[in-house]
Image (cartoon, rainbow over all chains, first blue to last red; front, side, top):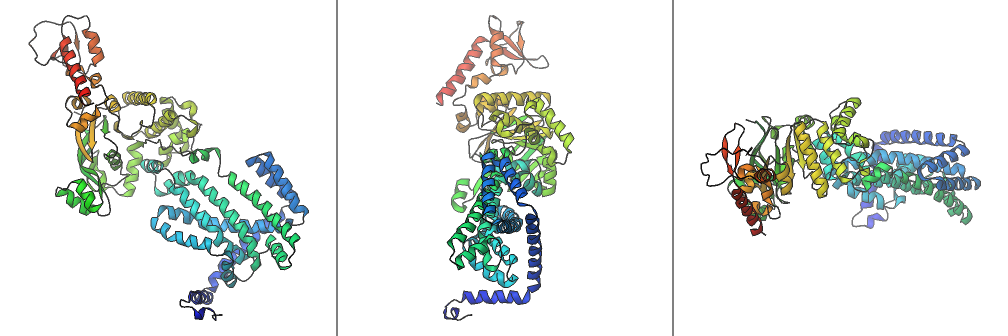
Length: 288
Length: 349
């Protein structure tokens, strides 16, 4: 295993291997607990989504599209979901949606609080920033190796590798949103006797909401792109078909499954983006 | 005799890494420019002492960078002073801990901001009731109070609109309502009307004076606009480079500007407009034995004095509250006074 890296002057690779093995040997129980919790959550989400009949699911998406973006988008949603259904990728698409939503939930649960912490504490912000850079630019495949070693093959390592990839925008945009709140608005909060928590929940978070929603949107899009790659460790969903098409050099299958990913991405993107522009938050964007 | 609401004693604010070193240098007489060169620290407020009386509108004036915005933020401790005392109602608030400070801000003071600083996600009514909500007043009571104050400034019809749907002047009225709703004994106003156009500005000044007539509060008002200061100020303090240059009533400052910095503020202002009867009294007061039919109070404004004086052959008597004659006003005393003011303001141009 260490054949190549023993030639190196600086065997970072060896160290990383040793650390991972040490963690495997000594913290297996903790990884099992985390793995089980995530597996349970992801199974629940998938079970619920697969339990919804295709027509009802289509109606729900079209309804939300109608409410947020109007009838043109609702029509597009109907056509897109119809196409996915007709090409026979419905089940895989719903599985991918479930994976994406599970990974997004975990990412936001971690990312938003960390983002708040970064905005409120300069030191934490300084320490977290390079970690985020690392998480985002390290080739996504690389996460799959330790994830599979810790959690075996299947949904759990897929979701966790996805979380690593999808957390940074949630952290960054939450932190940015809070730091961009007008100085006098924060002063107003203090001047009227806000405690630290009141300032956060009654002033900073509501005013930062458009930015946080942009973070949610980015997180979902990153998660969707990563859950496809995560099929390499057996995460399932549309990624399986994409992977199969590569292995079999089947362009047609690749195109069909890829198209389903694209359509799902467009629907999720437009809908989540629209939540960043409610009438009251628009004023905040204008900087009033 | 009025009692002091705020007493500020030897207050300093140093921005920089080593405020203790800077304080030592300041106390040994170093100038703030030297300190900046040597340490990179900025002395924002430099040994300032003054007091604000209960129920007055105390206007703090200065050019930008003079430290006035810092000083107002020291009073509600949005910034912590480096040294000195701020005594509010007999209590030194520089000693308060975080919890006591929150209590103080909820109970005794509120603030109006230059950029309005309304919460865009809250309706006008929810903005008005913000301070009460923070203090834990239940919804019904705080909304009732919010509506009451909105009505006072003529905004009741807009209670359910959002701030961005309102004009700048109306937004600042909401800012004023938010500050009044908590019924503070001290209101801090930081360039509160400076972002408004001149017409809206004088309208807001009228609203403030009207509210002050209905219920007297102590107001600490920061401004860079002399006309505003002369119009609303009970007393005016002038700040330059972190120091207070002069404190006095508008008339005192017009009559005896402490230095060129103060005089420069009057450049574009026709100060004769702010003259009062007591300023117009004949200087070489000849004993007058006659019995002039007309008399005016010392605070009578120039236009009113002129009106009284017109078509009058006798001099005008200035009488205080006790009926004591303070002196006489004649056409020539008025003219000489006005011309002196005009010359003064044109000389500085």
